Length: 299
Image (cartoon, rainbow, N blue to C red; front, side):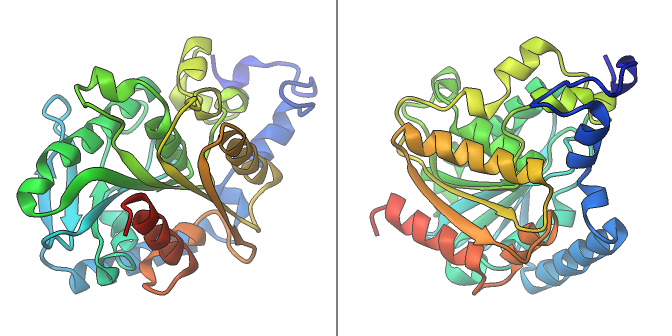
């Protein structure tokens, strides 16, 4: 089913919104003056960071898909932070998201920036599997590089924020053969924590969500009863009402379950530059991640 399969575009489909309203609310590109300018800024900052951090190791983290991640700032006894890019699951790359290493590496955190197979070549369930495989790889192999692999810290924006939520969900670690849940600090920016409204938008043209996939892959419905992870939730003040609501709703449910939460207000940021701010060593989000990592690891 695609968004064109809904002939009555005026009908209420989700939280009182019709299809046209949902399209506007979930059109991240249209929420900024120039999407091209944001892409160019990401590329410039990623190039700057790659040049500043040339000792980057590229590894295949998942033999089945052949997908890779880049490891920046490897040094003895450093914690590791995995960055998961956005792009509505059909765009983005690890090279174009190198900016995420720019602020944390100078503060003593190794950063892994990953690729995953993009839609529509694969669906959401396979993308989630790959992201979890990246965490498992780091948990099993980071220590051989001198890194602290007891807890893996994660972050992502937009679709990446959704995938962070799927890493915080319960039980998957046992299926992966891990003794305990591996996630420590988790930075979720502008995430999509309930997939239901997206089936009524252009996103479904390439994602083709089924009701079963929506139920299985909506983090808001999968908050664990117990968790030692620490969530940092943030969304740009210049984003649409629905992007802001999704983050607030997920954070509230996480906190109501009794889990650690920090909300970081970013009122002057949009859907794209909020993630890019991670390239600044003294940035608000970088400081929040560093504090959460220190708290989780008992430092």
